[in-house]
Image (cartoon, rainbow, N blue to C red; front, side, top):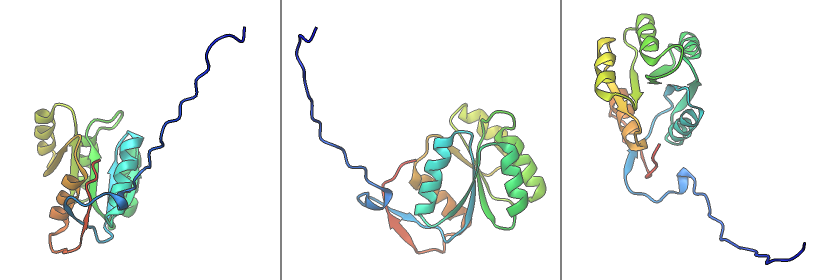
Amino acid sequence: MGIGTRFQIYLPSIECISLEHVEATTLLPRGRGELILVVDDESAVRQVTKQTLESFGYRVALASDGAEALAIYAQRQAEVAVVLTDINMPIMDGLAIIRVILKMNPAAQIIAASGLDINGETARFGDVGGKYFLSKPYSADILLQLLRKILGEDSQDSISSSSVL
């Protein structure tokens, strides 16, 4: 053998840009150390949401399923400012989580998120006492603005970014 043509291709590398280095396009509200419990069965969604929220001044607790979410909430109820939960998860869905959390604490602030059957999901969410719903996929600015609305708009702190979850 040993016959043929050999090629070497050199491609320029792409530099990854972190959230802190993204060019400013809009002012987004910052958290003030509030704890957000993020519940989602998709690891990538949990990690991106965690990185985004922490970059904007929030503390984050992560849960990959309903049982883990309820255990964390039971332990840290006094600390958790907002629960952000996916609706469509195996075993215990987000609506079941919401029902239990609202029984534990009727004043709990909960954001439900779903990318499936949005009209049906919002109706079911409203039936269990939910107020805040995000359609997936949602952008970081929508999430951050909703959190500031829920937690109070008295914060003048903001940061520039164009990040999308």
